[in-house]
Image (cartoon, rainbow, N blue to C red; front, top):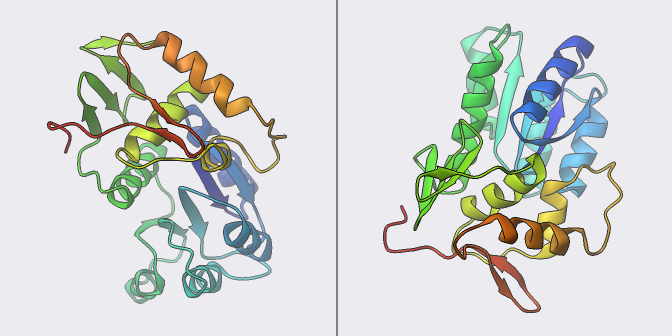
Length: 223
């Protein structure tokens, strides 16, 4: 999944980016509020992590402009400001969660997973579809209880489709969520990636809808 990180502190931005990438996310990061607003307004993200104290345009203004424009991806707000009134203002402006600095990376990742689950209608960190079980905390896919060895990109593909089970996802949407804005997107990259994942799966999981995209179907025992 592709995450937008807007943080002006170089050390925090670097550390959070590294933690997100190690957790299997694709990250676009910006230090300036204007640039962050533009990316969030023109690119596709699963979620954003937004510092309130940004130069150029403060984080609260960025958030309000996103929401006014109908950009509804979940937003986790980071801030050094501790006043409860500012937390309330952020939530009222459309933030999905709030994390004051300093924070532990484990908590930041847990809160991010939670808002992503809520946005996808998932309450449990483990998503089960038939024999497939996706543990979003361990970044692990198991089939019939047997873990599969997936590359980070392969895991991101399966995770995105399972988060959006029951919905056809186009190649363009997958490309936007699995690759950074700075990455040169090849026309057949998603098709190749899906083929590679399918060869590793012992059961059929990802279906093709010709001319539309890919889908992981819900089952009777899916949440």
